Image (cartoon, rainbow, N blue to C red; front, side, top):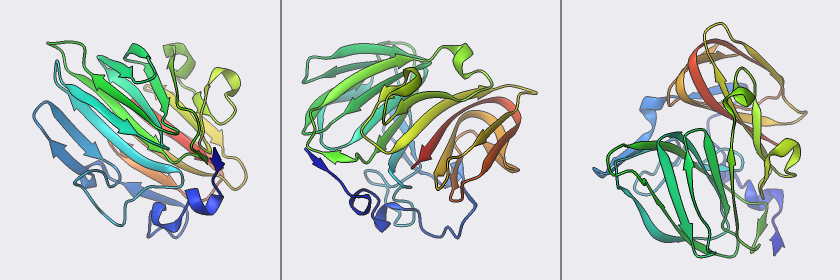
Length: 253
């Protein structure tokens, strides 16, 4: 197992260009898209046949795919190596099988996490033949290479993220979160009409907000479903004007 330096895991090719500081919107409609019939996907960063040198990732964040999978559809067995991957299920269920012998079905509100490490193959399917499912598929660059693969799941109770940030992935597994091999704290939150949320970022941190559903403003920047927001200067984040909003927040060391 090899620990990666900051330079190796945060090379300049991974950092979104054109940011002079503060906030930068990544509009939903500017994302790359793919439509395979059984799968419709929107890519916040370059992925598969979508390539944009200006959007190769942000800090340790490499992939955010907003995936819609038709009933019975899915991804057959395929390999991964040295990637931290999680799926945040928004609608329906996601069935996982892998070469380590793991198998589970995660429903809406749940998260499945896989550290590919030295190498693993897995499949992901919609177990329903009739109902579609939707999830955010996220990849991060690990802070070590060649580690033993591992897998975990977590159900986030609705009350735990109602009007607050629920930590579900972190480097140290604190506060009931799953421990991951990437330098990021990752939270989920839901905010409905009238709810507000404030968060003080750590010194020197950078952040990313991904809106899964609804709409909200962050420090005055209006965001809606599918929008992302890069935060290049640490400080206080103010989440306001929420309308049935569900979001992920990434904070990078």
